[in-house]
Length: 106
Image (tube, rainbow, N blue to C red; front, side, top):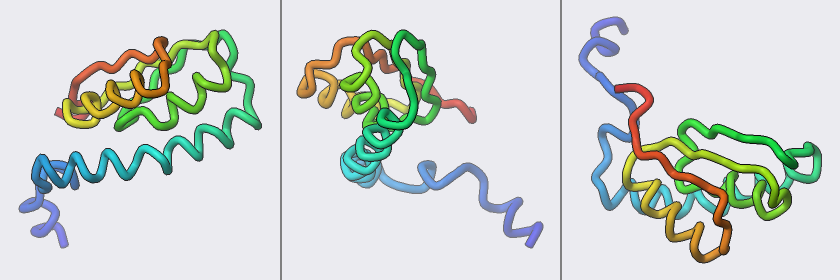
């Protein structure tokens, strides 16, 4: 098992194509949005600054901000999900999401 772990470096997203990553990010959005919607019913995020590391296309962030317009969310992820997140940000007219392109693991 150790030999396998040594030969496989990186994570899931290092082994998929850009188009597969885009498809994943687009399909991840509604799932994350639903989770954020549920969390917003349970937790009070009003007036908080939230950092979502690996937040993909911002579904969680969009849902939280739509329920708590006075908070701010920064989403850190790779370029592809951040670009898609910018599209959802405009579509939902949620201005207080900031997408930061980066790779937390590299």
